[in-house]
Image (cartoon, rainbow, N blue to C red; front, side):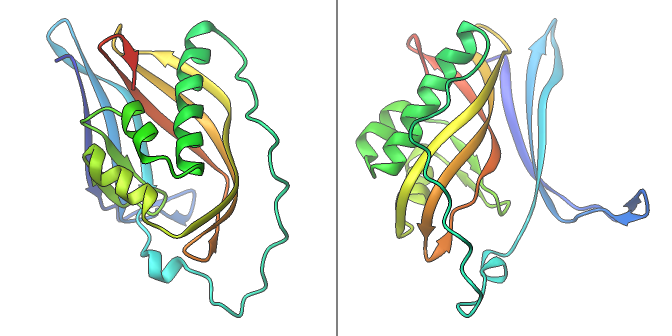
Amino acid sequence: NDAIVLTGKVTVDGTCGGRKLPSPMMSASLYVRSAEKWRSAYHNDVVIVDPAAAKKPASAKAPPPKKAASKPAEPKGDEFTAELFAVETKVWDAWKNKDRAAMEQLLAEDLTLVNSTGTVTVGKKDVVDAWMLPKCEIKSAAPSEGVATKISRVVGILTFKGNSAGTCDGQPLENFWGTSIFLKEAGEWK
C-alpha cells in the first residue's frame, strides 16, 4: 500500500553537452509513501530500441566467445544484500535451466519487466513467457556485484551486473547492469 512502480514512455527533444538526448525512452520509477506524501525512491530510463533493427546481420563477424563464469560472484556488503542477491541468483539459475516452476515461485504476481530494448511486459505469467519463449542456448548466467537498498520492511532494490554467455534467438547474450525491485510476500522476498 505504500510503494508503487510507475512505468511510462518518455519523449525528449533536446541536447545535453552538445549531444542529442536519446528518445523515446521507457521510464520506471519507484515511489514510496512517507508521511502521506509520495516520494521518489528509484528511477531508471531505457532507450526504446526496435529489436528487429537492433539485430546484427547474419554476415557480421561473430564476437569472440566470452569466458563462462564458473559461479556467481558473492556480493560484498551487508546481510540484506546477501539475502536479495541469493534470490536473484536463484531466478538466474531457473532461467538458465529453463525451470518455469522454480521461476514462478520466486517472482511476485504483480511483476513488471522493462527489458534492454525498452519493451514493457506486465504480469508474472507474461514475464516468465518472455524469458522462457526465446530459443536460448545459455552456457553461463549469473549476477554479480550486487548492492541492495532497503526501502521499507517489504520493499528492497538490488542493483547488480548481469553476466551471461550464449545466444537467444541467434543473438549473442550481453552483460548489463540491472536492477530488481523486490517485494516481501508471506515472509519471502520475491
